Length: 108
Image (cartoon, rainbow, N blue to C red):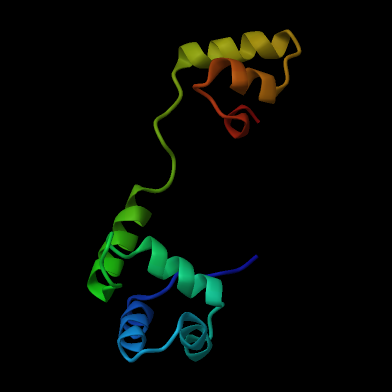
């Protein structure tokens, strides 16, 4: 599935269109985006109890994108435990449930 992030320009357009009284569906049509994209953007990038602000939305989205990605590396002692359970024929799901410090995806 292909998608791209909303641009800074689109976030400012959303702000202006909201100020002009347009609803989410109308904004989506004007920006050629799915209505759920606009709805999620407004929900995720608005400050609590405040109206959507383009500058805040750009800042919040940039911060969230910067902080995304891989978390902390898994310690070697945890990997040794994973290997031990794999040798005992535990499934990755069972290991992840037992250890809590490693996800099923990490084991695969």
